[in-house]
Amino acid sequence: MTEMTVLNGVAIEELLTIPMAVEAVEQAYLEKSKGDAALWPMVFHEFDPGHADLDIKSGDLGGLGFYGLKVVSWFGANPGKGLPALYGTSLLFDLATGAPRALLNAGPITDFRTGAAGAIGAKYLARPDAGTLLMAGTGALAPYLIAATLYLLPQIKTVYVANPHHPECSAAACEAITPQVEKLLSGCGGCHAAIAAAPDLEKAVRHSDVILTATPAREPFIKAEWVQPGTHISCVGADMSGKQEVDSALFASAKVFGDDTAQCLSVGECEVPYKAGVFSGHICEIGGVISGAEAGRTDASDITIFDSTGIALQDIATAAALLQAAQETGKGQTVTL
Image (cartoon, rainbow, N blue to C red; front, side):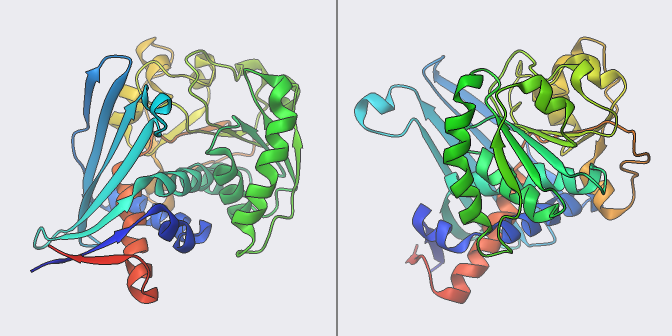
């Protein structure tokens, strides 16, 4: 018989921290760069086009000894039935035997690992003296992106929060996001930055050293002429074909990095400028920068872009860290198959 650990959302939120997520995601990038990990083909299926679909991301991490997958389903009519529109479920398996090891609620894992990913891009590509951060996007991911970036770049003292499409909502969003950031950082040094709303997006972009974008935009809202030399941008929102947050013209002169080249060019922020011929398609994967095999920023005036499309290895590494934490603390449920 095989024992499997089951972790629901409550258990995961009790166990998972910003430092854990950062360590797991960075390890996933390193494993990929060393050739000890593999991404498998993505699956996307529409049950009812425009109304109900699912996608499956999967892969293996040889260094950790696991393979796994995440299934995310979207059923647009669910809220009318009193149900969430989105469900996310992760499965973790032993790479040596194929035995199932964990079943996890993927929702909080996705929030933490996505925040960690954007922040890791800033850690390795932003200027060392970066002091100002702009969070462009006020959805569920915003607190995690801000918190992880402040954890990795403690020199940042000012954070601007902007709703690119509804600037009049920036103040209310900032008021809601700030306590969430403080809570996420409460166990790892606290929040030492001033967080303020930025109703004027152009002004905020021009005055920010680091920019994080996390929206479902299909029309770019970060204009190339606004971005100052030396700026770093971590793009998180583009995760399917046609999405775009950053002006294509910026890709002609910026240094471009990503989590997975093929995914960045097919569904990421790089897709539109690449297909339009504005961008050559040359992407340096972040794992190579972390390992030291590839150069990151080489000049204080470089504009750097990190295309964080979200890869299965992030979820697998974070799930593995959670499984270990659950075993050490006795949290979750153990079921016998």
